[in-house]
Length: 103
Image 1 (cartoon, one colour):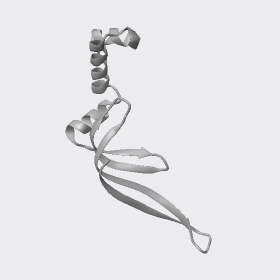
Image 2: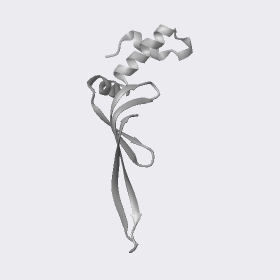
Image 3: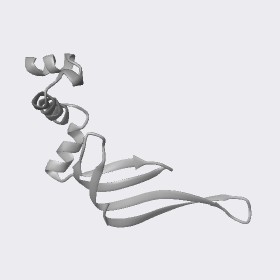
Image 4: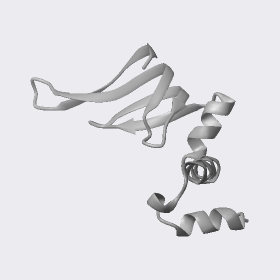
């Protein structure tokens, strides 16, 4: 159940809010919105799987993040699949990965 104060803040436009009200709204979004998953990962040091461009994936621990989803990651394992053609015209898929300590 949402707080009536938060409901009121959600109905106003951002330029009508004070700095304190914006901070309250962001705190609510971090604890109850989609960013709450990242907040839980930071608090409990849980690994997350992040899908990025070119069909690559990162398995990492989130150290910090902001509302734009910029993240500081630790113990990152980057994984991807490369396909190459063999002499017979067949395609061969090779899974590759690399480790990055801080990203």
